[in-house]
Length: 457
Image (cartoon, rainbow, N blue to C red; front, side):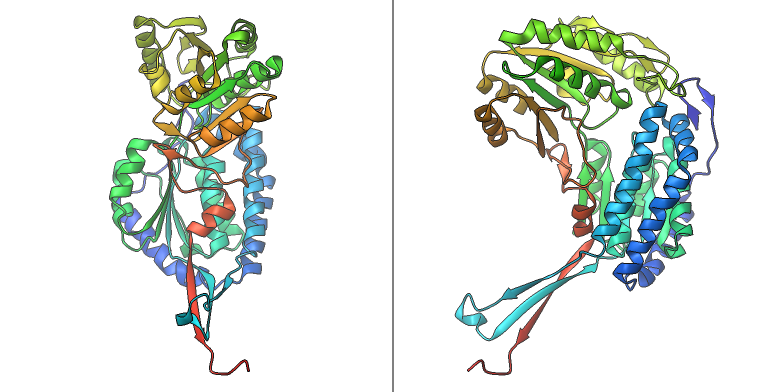
């Protein structure tokens, strides 16, 4: 594993071979026999213990996150805090797995019958996570799996496997059955064997659209949850608080070096406030401290690798050749990429139509809200977006017409509370995450129908 800021080797891990993956699937199958009968209070107790252990090992996790993903120290601490929160939310949800009574007498054929359903764990689940939030996103898979009473196999990114391995140790120490806990660092192409294994009942994947939709084809007839990224729009209407909007847009563009599915990428400013708001955004983008993620003053650390930074550099160069103008940034130093703002872009340019996953934004102007709605919705993605406005009419219009999983009003689209339903449409995926919602994916609703053998009269 490489510390991308210096390019030096940070650690070595063993990659799981095909035999290791097969053993992990075998263990998960055996482990499910134990987890499916764990009572709710025991699952909740285990999840609370995991949360406590993550907190106890905070500094160890922080150092791993800094070195395996280049995350600045403040953002690493925030990720650990969120991971603890996800496990505690999962603990709460594990004792709320209620069913429902369903009267059958809405038709004459159902007279004399009553139905009720309850939730049962679906079976072993397969979880695949990316590099950008390696601890928190692993918790978003593992927490719901434990809450549902499922065994699991987790395949983390090979770039950021240390945090997942340490997390698995916390799960084992907290008392979850050993066979139920499996982490297999391996290259994505090798993981297709796991995806094809019919013993997995649910696949939860976070990553790129190309890989996600490919995995869906390999997982027929079973449930799948896909969170596949986006190119989040932020719209500033003419009545917005411009200073606030500019600051939040800039922050949302550079957090985690822009390597977030909901990082601000496309910014749309109304004609009446375009110049003023743009100047404020540029001032903020110039002010961020770029450099060593180990230093507390650093705002923007390196991207996950120099290769990814080079890809960003090339896409921006192509946009400039086609007429775009760099207003600030556009500079690469190894794996560091400086906060960047582009103007004079068009929808077909890669910097607009693809997911850049880097600390850059494009800025475009619009004249009326119908126009900007069309611009926002022309994207192939539909994860999260935001509108800054003080108008109730604009808010309601945006809520009705925005094509995406979440619309945030008066904050950046980079907002995520770990308890909320999170996911998108179009190329951004299917299904919703957040502990309560992924638990539902990991469980079956089992219906029981009872015929009454007595008379109510």
